[in-house]
View 1 (tube, rainbow, N blue to C red):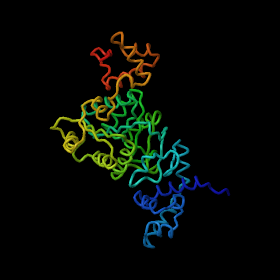
View 2 (view 1 turned 120 degrees about the horizontal axis):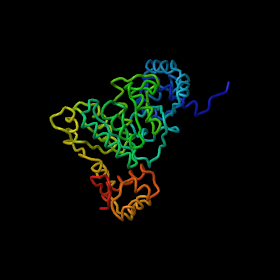
View 3 (view 1 turned 60 degrees about the horizontal axis):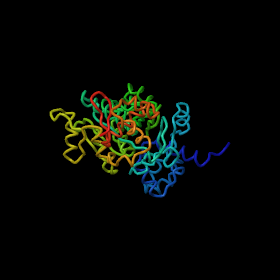
View 4 (view 1 turned 135 degrees about the vertical axis):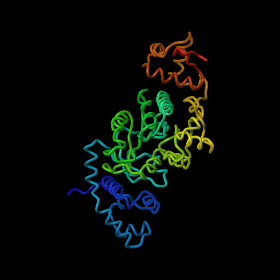
Length: 361
């Protein structure tokens, strides 16, 4: 029988840890900080666990038995059949941002493509499941505008604001990244399966939970720390005072991420959480331009612009034009031209007229 390679042993060990709730992510960090080896951890050696985790012998033996009872190969086979990528801590495909966490997952599951590239900018747009028409409209607009500016839109697949943000980004041809509070083969909410498929086609969907684990209340704060880690900034669009989104905000602040909030009607429950955030210092935004200015994306003049953006400005020099005409003049797709025009608009270099044409400022 062929012996598994170091990489295979590490992956199997990571999956085994993920299948064992008693091990836990904080205990995993403790194990790593004690100099523990990932491949070693999953063997279920009570003596090793006792030494690394400073456990009493009975606790170490119980944890070792729990580890040995789980079968990582069954989980890996199911992932392979479903086209799901499984990445152990520190291995290929494991987001570097997760390593910042005080409680990193030992393993992550992913559908879709993800390049751990520092050049990718990701902004989370999150909020209440009981969204108003106003909130959904704002979330869709922010999602679409972020996508046109080349920003990946992060959300958690919740009903309401999360779904609206992803819908907006996808409608603009953008890239989305999502994180589930359940296993990838038990998506929650169930009606979000179509959205998950759409996101996986253009972006990536992550989960730290075993494939067939359903959503539970305690999973949502755990999911939120992964969303915060992946984001450059978090935008809250409608949230009750006790909304679960507040845990996302706490994680974001702990990680040094920017937190922004959209004001809403003060007499609505769905505005109380955002009002609280604004009182506590979150940056208020009322439009995509406010968001881009808050993040410092509106600086620089024409001389500092990329070649394609300068070409768009030149195409507007003779006078106002629609995005379709700009696309023809610059040999671009209309979708690409629209994105460049939005970027130039938030930089303050072009203005959009009521009839949809653009002109130089």
